[in-house]
Length: 184
Image 1: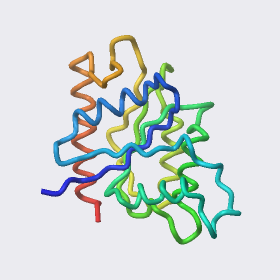
Image 2 (image 1 turned 90 degrees about the vertical axis):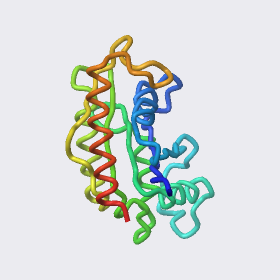
Image 3 (image 1 turned 30 degrees about the horizontal axis):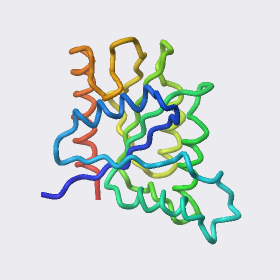
Image 4 (image 1 turned 120 degrees about the vertical axis):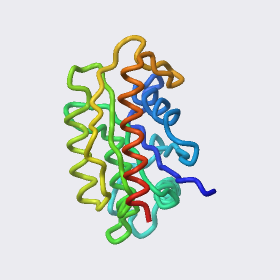
């Protein structure tokens, strides 16, 4: 039985990232036929149209990681009411040069966690707008705007609350169905 490969983008580079914890929790809740490939974004050059004709090795690797996947999942914090620059840079690299958008047609999911009361609502809205332009069909519901609190999710992705586990399991179930419906 072949596995569904998900390119997983974590928008935070922070060593103790809450979003990395959330990503690990999501991975644990996914069915066995889904595998997650963490896409490295911390070593990418800043996108410049100057290298469209000859992509740097790390940029080419990013595009290959996306193209090898059946779907994409973005787990992102919110910086200044939007997505982190490092994530936007990765998206720009993955969608360029014109005519070689690696995200096109890949079913996508977006979620995030923050210490703020509204979680990552605005960052997710911005990211959804970008993904719509990139022709990546994105799961609309349920939305996951989580506020991080002590004991909610540990470093290994273990969820400390049954209600949170049920909520995230519902998200994962819907994402899996979305991917199966839209994957090539």
